[in-house]
Image 1 (cartoon, one colour):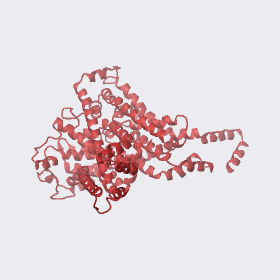
Image 2 (cartoon, helix red, strand yellow):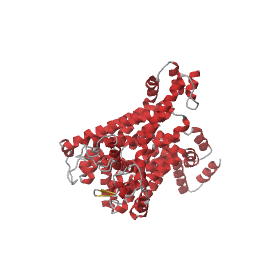
Image 3 (cartoon, chains in turn cyan, purple):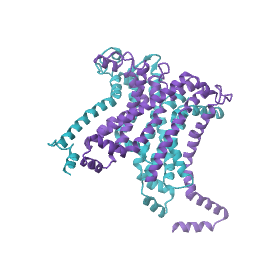
Length: 303
Length: 312
């Protein structure tokens, strides 16, 4: 028993004599050593983005130490943040992501509520269907979807291809199944007594949803919102297929296609753009990491 | 009580009002409410996922101008192309190797994070999860710059160790190595976080019992940790296999399939053929080859998920 207590409290106490705690201390040192190595591996690309973004093009093309900034400058940031093109990409990305988040929540919250609580004909099949849809990748659907929207455009005369708003129809195919799936998990974990009491008190189903489920499952809702946002913000394949004009592009496609001109890579600006494109998800993550992780672990494992 | 009074007042009214009341009742019925709550979801899945999926199978049977039915013509054409078999091979190498290393690295890192005192874990977890948070298209650009043939930061660093310049994206072996490396970098944090959650759910008593029985470090992992985590390892690996197999961003940005289509995988090849060469039917046929593998993985995941549901 005594060995066990030393073992558990080991890391916080000073190292005591006895083989158990000495082993423990060494295990801890090795853990930190490898964690530092893995952290370097994880953070090298984002740090290198930052380093490059602060350099002048002259310094980038000079054969000096790439890991050090000799003449730091904000010129890349100024240039990008004052260029209409870049702001346009940013605006398109923000518009698409925010609207997609709203649409996703409007579809998936009621659906998840119905699937988690109201047993109806076909509800089990539909829940399985939602899960299977969540596994259907974008790289399987982009060709038929492209053709479908081309046909719709032909029939109705509404310009859809090469318009940023076509993405508002397409992104929910990625976000809705996923968000519904994690919301089902969260709603299912709410004790039945809560909503039974509400129904007995005469609340309608909708009131039960808005007054009880949404407030109680708020952490799950936040997690789902973050996911819908990051998925829409990061999408690359669909905008690459559906938009081509410079004023219709979203950030990832805009940076990869317009800042690279032929064989000339303006790395300072590309890295600045990439960093600014990575910033919104990173900022959200910095503040809401626990929700993000809760959503991640719930989404992929909860049955 | 108030509800009953309202109902009684309503029945006393005219026939049309009664009809309204029955409609009102129908709307209050559980199945009706549920139907309307799920309707947008059903429509979305049916119109934008199911329909395109089947439409894709139809497209695959047409000729390039989409005027004529050619049956399996596109598939027989693909089977005769050497490039296609290279894509099949490369997709399998890419997915299996990347998932294996992601799982291995995730497992190791999760253990190290789990090992350190709980107070510091949050900080490390936060740093190690960053690759997963950055949009892959953005981070892959950073890798592209790190691999740059003339100004490569990697080659600069390696030159200090006397290792000659490596042609990261131009040489077949190194190009394959690079796309897998970037995919592992991007995907390992997901495994790390899933395994960490699994590790935390293993009861401490089991390790205590193992320690009393004199189990060493390796025996604890083999006889306690692995059996307890088996479910999560299986489901995470299968899920990641689907995602990695269907990956597009990393290969597209890093090599666009080059050199000589040696790093082309299903998604990038389908894009190349279907959108860039505008042979939509052939592109659809290429991406359809992902279906059997996705289906097998999905069946296994689903079996696991429903088993878990039955246990709960």
